[in-house]
Image 1: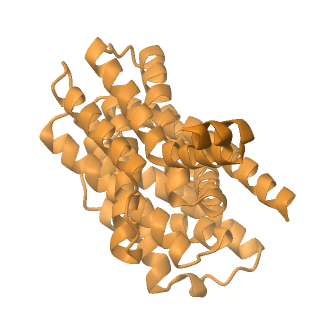
Image 2: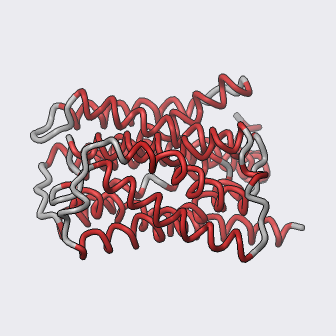
Length: 312
């Protein structure tokens, strides 16, 4: 039993790290696509149509009951993880830098998860988590007062995106949705929901170069919507929503490195400090309290430490 738990933790961690790399790359690929021919709605539509076709073929070959996917809980989770999150984050990304997007969404994600868990399950934060929240807030203040920082409008859209993905993270685990269900439902439901809406939204899909469409289709529709969704859902199942969200502390740092390499983004010293503070705050949010508990237990079990305390 113990070895199984350890194996689950390790595989959950590896899945989370894979998610970090894909999610960081998604910020860069999306920012690059939005700076060229495609609109926010084009990138979203390409993502869902590509992913929807792939999972539909899989569902038919595996003889999965598609009708069983259309329940209220599955639809809500799918739209939060899909249309609501993607549209809000892309609009925020359009008005902000790649570094800002990584800090705001991933910095807010653990806090949003904790807030939803508190309202839903009445579970409060511990002292270490309050330290993490404070550091994340400091990081965002540094970000907004820095050169090239995010605007208020960008902040609101990115916070909406963070709330959507946080609600998905918590509700999927609370409602006990299986990995296979989520893998098929999210792309399929969002393709059916968003494609008719896309028809009435501003689009440059007819004039966009084919290589841009193919790149967005492969990365958005397969790498992010299927592979990353699998990694994220698996990590949440094995580690829990808050712990999985904490791994995302690496996303701002990785995003900045990729933005500097591929987008020639200039990072000021204040922005760099903000990213480090945010990452440290997310780590404290989940990792500090377990470390302090472990430290206390080891001190109590150490005879030398115990004898010193008794002499005092």
